[in-house]
Image 1 (cartoon, rainbow over the protein chains, first blue to last red):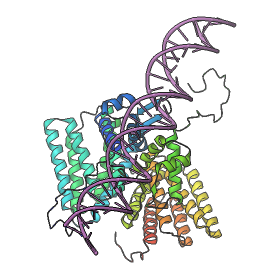
Image 2 (spheres, helix red, strand yellow):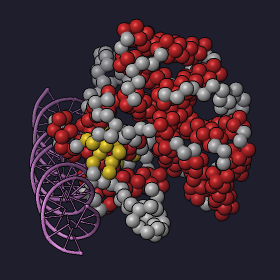
Image 3 (tube, protein in one colour):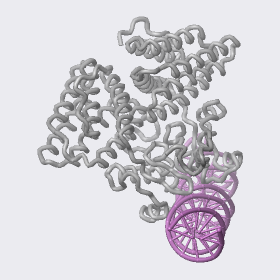
Length: 236
Length: 236
DNA sequence: GCCGGGCAGGTTGTCGACAATCGTACAAGC
DNA sequence: GCTTGTACGATTGTCGACAACCTGCCCGGC
């Protein structure tokens, strides 16, 4: 079928059908990015008329986008009160990382089942390089961005649309945790080492090592965020 | 603060604040249930005016509800074409069960970390009893309902809101698979045995056994649905 | 006989306006 | 002084209508 139509073999390139996504989806992406960036701190009320005017759309599509974000758990809706950015407490932080561990572990195992992991490992390596550059420059935001990219690439490489969708929301919530608590000074060297080990385990196909490193990585992140000393000897 | 107000110690019982949920949420639940029940088979177009009239609401709230379901992945939206119930192919079935395995494994591990698993085990046992009754009566729908409940209770017992939310969507998709393929004759005895073993592993606190049984349970379900013989000797 | 243009029908996308509800501030009464 | 009742402002929830768009069919031309 491909290329056999009436186009006489003209190469169409990546000229895919410009399926302009719905306005609600675009608006949802925009607001999601704003929440992730910390433009809307947790707890702030999002007035509909104000947001609609700022985005240049009417209240209809904006409300649809809001419902999407509510379904994702990023926003909290109170009837006749308004929409608020969800603020995450310590239990939420643990929950986010619990869910992330579940999703990313499954994604990594899926990736390990694939024969050719070269491209995926290359993208992870690129993300690590970005992290290194950000750490060298002392740019905490860029470091968090690259960290985000690393885990997003990991899940995307699994090829599972559902894990990918879940991961997207969870990563946004992760950024909310970081932005809220102003975690500006992570010990970047440890962070880099953990990511490198994770990549190496994936490249080598060592499922056992990968699982162990991933779980430790998540546990470390929770400890860092909640500012409690990591448990010295936890069997689980 | 609690009980120290001007109510003079009067017991308020479970008089919770009647936070009537938004209309969009109610509509979304209704349509989600309809999709799960198989009222709207995969691929059917959902006309907005028709649905709105049937539910007694306007198109505004209905569209908001639809956006929710699109975000959950249950509906597929095509611009200026309409909303369609997503139809799941073999890859989707595998993906649903991959994600379910990840979520339910994490939930079960969380449950195992709790000291008192008595109530949770009791609820799982109740779900198994319902399955037994349905199997004895030859009621395939009730059997699927009870199966659904078992897994929903398992995840709910973990106490993780995010795992719970993910699980809800995944279980609906599971029902879509079953309804679409008219899987009316599952070997209920095997199914019951698997659930009983899972419950027993949870009650006994055997994480290793639980993981093994759960993964086998999911793999069996995929095999049953896709109607392929289960792989005789798969190392992974 | 086959292809392109045009038209009609129906659907979704978007908008503005009205009604219901909530929070707040102020005044009145005990 | 504290509580209670009331009015106001602001926001959300809902609705109806118009415009844009896609699909399918019909017709004229080659």
